[in-house]
Image (cartoon, rainbow, N blue to C red; front, side, top):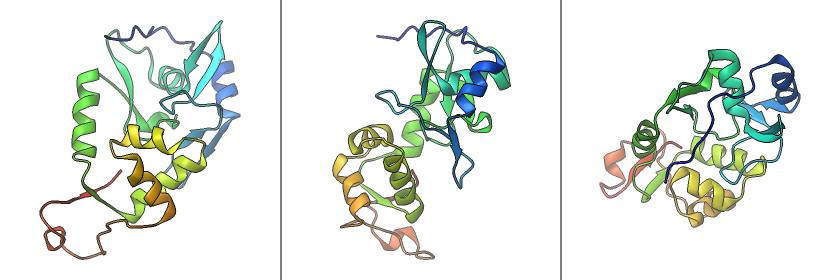
Length: 172
């Protein structure tokens, strides 16, 4: 069942200023909203009598109206990011296809960058279960990455085929 999300988000400087007062920037250029996240990890802010996704408000402010039938997608895969350069509009289908391309199978090898990203999401208040759901991996993968235990890693410069064809590198 499709979720009916209104595309007429508040588009004014005052609400953007409220959002930006609660944003920190990470090393990847993500603008991480530090307020309470939704169950999916997206930033949210209260305005006009309801809760709004911070990424939707920022997208509308910098890029204009969100067309009917489109969602605001994160190119960086960080749900509480609201950097307008990391956001794009797209359909649910595009989002699903992008997720399959980026995430692929659950039997993965994590890069050091992926583990750092998991740690950053966890430090920003997301639960391991939420991170796992968003990234399409098992919860045990997230907790092992956080504990730095039993993680399959690709050594820099080593060809992927040398690890085994069953696994493939995962850049989260």
